[in-house]
Image 1 (cartoon, each protein chain N blue to C red):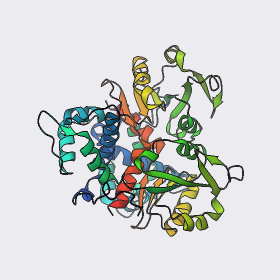
Image 2 (tube, rainbow over the protein chains, first blue to last red; image 1 turned 135 degrees about the horizontal axis):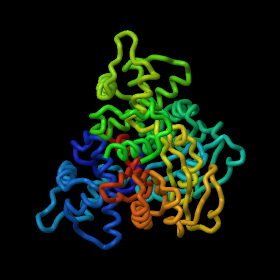
Image 3 (cartoon, rainbow over the protein chains, first blue to last red; image 1 turned 120 degrees about the vertical axis):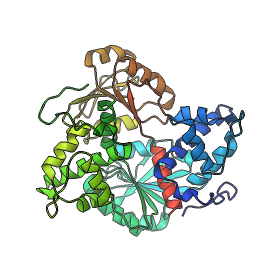
Image 4 (tube, one colour; image 1 turned 45 degrees about the vertical axis):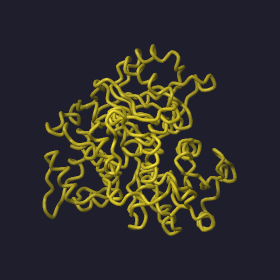
Length: 222
Length: 222
């Protein structure tokens, strides 16, 4: 588990939320993103209709999701943005500092190292690994690239919480096994294969071609 | 709508499938990927337990999804891989040729242009657009980069079916409006904002930071 820099914002989330269905977690993450943006714009309150419009879900779904956190909006005033941000952040673990490594610095890995959206959510990329001698020793987005052949030793030193896997599909299972052995708690997998890992390791699979197929399906069926 | 190069494989999908819930569409896409891989390995049949194990869903869910396509496995034999691939492909539109453009050739756009997983699913990247003079006129992954300032004229010439949006968040809504005006049927949006488009345009939003938050949530709650 990651370190807890600030006990106040990382207080144990409400019991019950750990059974949230996957779509609800995805929505909380989107609410969180929009609430941050509104706070940056100086807004202090919003209602379920406004929040729903921002992420394209109905006000009723917003109210149900937020009441599962124990938060109820006040009629005519709505939800206080600061409190709601803190509550959702606690559920999503954004008050924690997650140490993240990336394996596979191809074009997608390169893009992920340059991506600026992770840091402010508490995800710090601490190292990247690749086998290409032309990349080893370089830095991308401020992150050093290490030799993937010596990854195990480096992981023992860093003990990262999470790993992002951006290797070719035929290497994904092997690298994932090394990451599990090194004690990584979760893997975000971009290789187009479904990783099957022991129950102690969480995995989220993102298949970019599959997302394009979902889009094509909805174009065909509207 | 895209062109239909081969009427045989693009025959109208079974009625009823157009009401498939979103998770089911995602699963069909994963089944399709695994079936292709098995066919490449010379396999001819598989059962719901085997297919479920490959994509980490229960055999019962596999059977329900496939029976919604009108396909029932035979006891002791399972499903014929070729027929199943054809049926799922028809539902997902993979027998069609989709003309796709990409807007925003930053590091993520660059990675998407180099990504080799789209073409074999029927998605052909026909043009990319950016405002950076250093990129305009270049090719990445065989795709020419055009001046985004003259995108409207080029879109009228190409009339693409789908667009991939990989622009900064503050430009996403403006570019999306141009794409809708140009008659694009669907947008795959990587900018971290939920696009709200007229009902005639489909949209799938992919937020990379949100996926990492989903992973962190499941690590915290297992």
